[in-house]
Length: 360
Ligand code: SAH
Ligand code: SF4
Image (cartoon, rainbow, N blue to C red; front, side):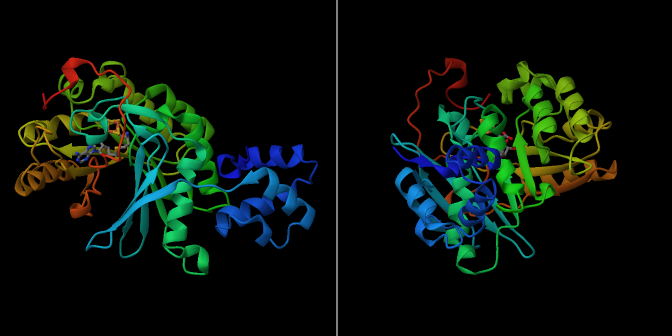
């Protein structure tokens, strides 16, 4: 069986090259060919000595996941469904904007955390993605968008906001993050790579130590009672612990604020009183708040807050000095928006009955 070099971060490649008795600079050459130039054919890696190219062709491969489907929305949002084996698939979404292009990638097939308002969470968990499946999303998107054929690099930002909880697939996610910011690979600035988490407190500390990138935290409720019902993970890591972890993270973070995400669910968490509680809750944490209009999916049991309600909520936050943005919904007709990514997961978990069915 050949070794997939897309499964290796810089250190892994260095060890692999050493195991072939090759000089360390070969690892850097390989990284540039594979990640920067998107090359998967060793015979075309022209500055690598021919005997090594031949050895690589016999023992290794550069193998991203297979694209199952490719859909393009009217607003330019593009979604790829990627085969991750055994009938499972995950999504990667490219969102073009005026001054930047953002790729939203997945880290798990499904998710164990069962947030009530999330389509991924509702479908259960299958498995962690490998490094090649995570970084392969960026590799493929670059290729599909023409960036590796001499075109401009259109992906300026990466957000880990697709399917899954990145901090529960920590090692593979961090290996992929390291490639994203590696000058010889994708060369993205740490500030332009954002990891979104539901709040796995100990792993937030590990991320700070091992690969601090911009951090987004899914809050969605301003008090523990409500957050417990929407996001079961809150029972394990309640708000006080989560906010303390955010403060610790900022000591190492590449940005001087945390982005708090807050999905707007009509009649659930969108009252002015919730906004006031939210102001108090985050008062000690330098932050921005990103309001996300709920994206519906079948049988969700939730409704998106009306625009006026979202505006009012935003005004209350803004009046207290918190920079607040409302996320634009993109790629509606191809189900590419936050929380709608469903991939195709063969659920192997047995879900607790109380988490089934419609909303709280
Ligand atoms: N597991 C991570 C990252 C993936 S979800 C996390 O939860 O942060 C990315 C963002 O989309 C999170 O803020 C998540 O709460 C939000 N989201 C999930 N379902 C949604 C929905 N139906 N509509 C709008 N946002 C949703
Ligand atoms: Fe998992 Fe994030 Fe969805 Fe919650 S919102 S179920 S953590 S993917």
